[in-house]
Image: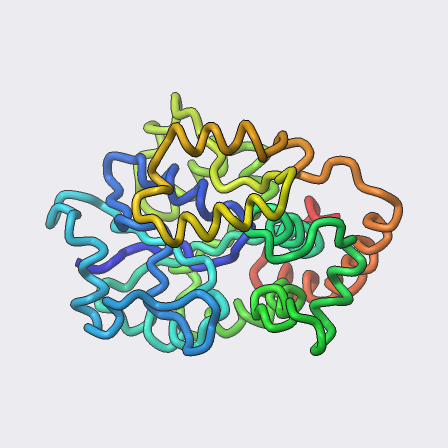
Length: 299
C-alpha cells in the first residue's frame, strides 16, 4: 500500500499538528512515523531510512498496518520533500497518484521560528545569538552553522514560489492544496474542514475534536544540559519514551511557551523581520498570482 496523500512542505509551518489531526480521522491511516523521508536527496541533512534501499516495497512497509480497502486516505508527512529533487522526480510516478498538501508560513516568521527552534529545541545555535547575528552567520561560509544546510538555506527555502512552480509542472492543480499556517492557527477547525474537502473526507469528525498543538518551539534554561540530553537520547534506546523522565526534564530545563514564541521582540529583531519582508515581497507576489492565494495575513 502506498500513500494517497502527502504533506510535502514546509518545515516550521504546522505539518506535525496537521499530520496528527488528520491521522485521528477514522477514514485516514497515517504512516507509523510522521516523517518517512523516503525520497530525500543525497547529502541532505535529513537522511533517508534504510528501507529506501528496497525501492517501493520498502516504502510500503511504512503503511503495512493500514487495512486494505479499509481507509479512504493513506497519509504520510515529510515537509522537506518540497525541496528535494528526488521527491519531485519520484512522487509523480507513484501508482497511488497521491495528492499533495503544502503548508506555508509568512517567510520572515518561518525563519524567525527556525532560529528559535535551532537555538532551543535542538541547540545547534548558541544561546545569546541575536537574530541579526544568526542571519549573518548562515550567510558566512566560515561559520560552523553554515554547514547546516537547513539553516544555511533558510532564506532560499522560504522563497516558496521557486519550489512550488516546479511541483505545479508535474501535478495537476486538483492534486495540490496550499494552506497557510496563519489560517490554521487562527481557525484550526475551519482549516481542517477545507483539507477534508480536498481529501474527500467527512469533516463532521472534527466538530468536537480538540486540535492539540504539537512540535512547538520551547526555551531551554541551560543549553549544555539540553545538548547532554540529546546525546543520551541517541545513546539510550527507549529513553524518549520515558514519560516521567520527559516531564521531570521539562520542569527543570524548559521554560514557558510564550517565551518560546518570542512574543517580546526587541527593535533589532523587528527591523530584521521588516528587512526580510522586503526581500520576500516579490516572491510572495508571484506566489499569490500563480496559485491564486490570498496572502493578506502575511502583510
